[in-house]
Amino acid sequence: MSSGRFVTFEGIEGCGKSTQIKLLSDWLKTRQPNHYLTREPGGTRSGSAIRKILLSEQTETLTPIAECMLYYADRFQHIEEVIRPRLKEGRLVISDRYHDSTLAYQGYARGIPLDFLNEIWIRSGIALDPDLTILLDLDPQIGLQRSLEKLRAQNLDESRFEQESLEFHVRVREGFLELSKLHPERYFVVDASGSVQEIHEQITKYFLGALASWRLRS
Image (cartoon, rainbow, N blue to C red; front, side, top):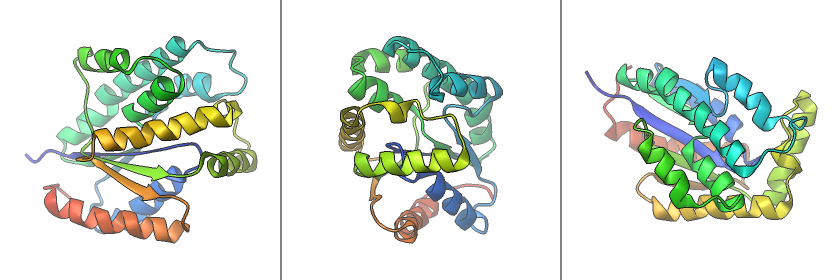
């Protein structure tokens, strides 16, 4: 039985992850139809409840460590309930955000020591690393504007992080770029300032090579 592959999309608010994941999924329908899309937080039923706490602007102030533990609770349930079972089926799993977001947001931006975050990750006993991480890199000022416009248009109460300062989001971006340098073997960094189609073409071109090297079941 062949094992599946795990792909994650990362980036600051408004970088276009959701759009590019949808386009990639449409492109994959004739190449790898048995793929599965998920997200963090909120990839499970319990995770959906956690997502409301973490992203709602109505949420009272959370300490960095309390916020961090909620993300880990969501992720560990997500791995055991959703990701690992589908990988065992030989499927391609694509997640909108994953562990690198915790390192970037709660580590680099909030200031929680990375050693502490990584120790929790390793000691959990269920840590699972992606085969590929696609980072959509964008100027935070542009991303924040895009994200707020999208949330208003969709009438979504998920703007808690958009309320943070521009300096916070600059640190998040810097964190992601630093992680891409620490893990070049799995990171593919895309300039997200281009058009939607240009970004999509870069991702699919890279994916052709990845699919050719992965043994996956349709």
